[in-house]
Image 1 (cartoon, rainbow, N blue to C red):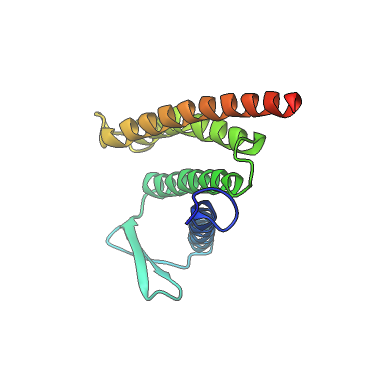
Image 2: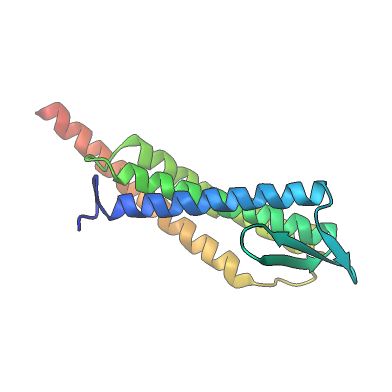
Length: 170
């Protein structure tokens, strides 16, 4: 199986990441709708929200900070998966060094190097009121992933420039 181009591994990953982002967006929309319309139960200061079609439920502390943390984390995850799907969509094309992949890699870099750490510190301190850094591995992974996407952005930018120069020469 080919890695790039139509009918390739890139196409497969495009559909996987896009599908997961749509499912998560649907889940987030349902969850927010359920909280707004009181379609959940509260017992012992914990909420219990039934998930339609699955037979399962979400449970957690019924506090604004917990609900806000879940919402922000889901939004971040949806954006991350959507950008990844856009990157794989750009890799489906016959010319892989294109402006679309460079734009999406830049956005992925910003998401991981700026938005992710800001969100991490917002959740840890002002929202959850923690006194120490918890789950620091998540922050480290964000920074590592951001550095890799920054590196890939520069590689694809250089490839695009070389390809453009070659096209002008021919």
